[in-house]
Picture (cartoon, rainbow, N blue to C red):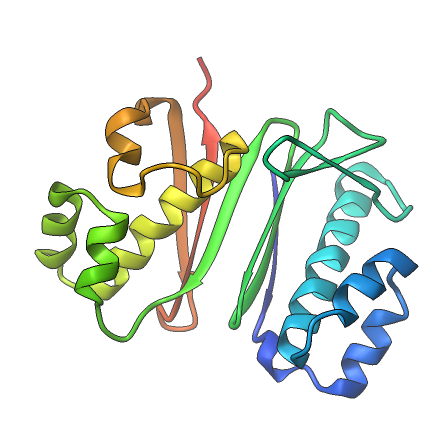
Length: 197
């Protein structure tokens, strides 16, 4: 597995972005430029460049990746179906993971305060209790959220489930989660794979 992280994308200037954009194939450049805000253009651009970097470093692939999409719009590599990847980004980081097995990831900034309505929308009663009784509820909320998102991106389903019931209806024992933080625990990311049988 290879993990590539680009932190502080909010610090990228227009001049730096212009240089990054020149490295993209036309279709990805158009996709990036379709976003209105600079930060969103940066996130779209850097996600693709991280994937390209990872494919080069891990497999020696030095061409621009082309995507196909699953039924739930999960991108897959058209020419390399045995190579799996996942991308995620937020305003404080861009994440790319590449592996020989299916993989999912999510990166999020840690909220400064909890929204009770959002908690009820995303988590079961037991999960909410665990979050509020943790040493750092905002950190616990974000960690749990990234776990759910990464699991759904692994399975390719996306946010199509009843989120509070997700880990009650799915066999979570089949998932292997790895959660990391950086920038003084202001940003968290989780990587999810299937456990080896």
